[in-house]
Length: 171
Image (tube, rainbow, N blue to C red; front, side, top):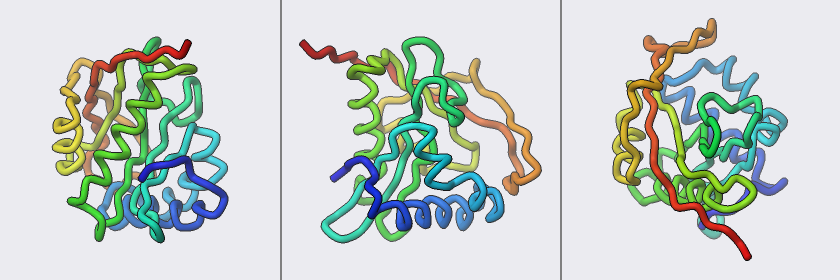
């Protein structure tokens, strides 16, 4: 089940995203502590969590247009960031449920996006396979590089993926 992050979820959700990104080698511990805070993530968009009856299994941020977390989305586009699934919950469809929830929410007002655009690091092979299973395709013309003194991954390159989505309107 996927729902917006509640006040009761924040400690576990933040611990999860920090643990995944640091342990898997995608960012430094100092960067994770500084950037992955409740204030930063909630200012960036809608924070969603996947959970079972007792445990937070994954987290993602559906980025708001013009937010500090926005890296890619242009007009009629939405993006999500910081998809993280607990290692012990991988292979159970948690990441896919989070991605599909982002697509569903982005397709409706107020975003009414026509495309979901995301980026990933070249070393994030499992994420790339997930995005392809969910119907995303590479968009190499929009690939870019980042520079950060807190970057521990050898690559600063970001690979861009896109998925056309059906916009839903409410009447």
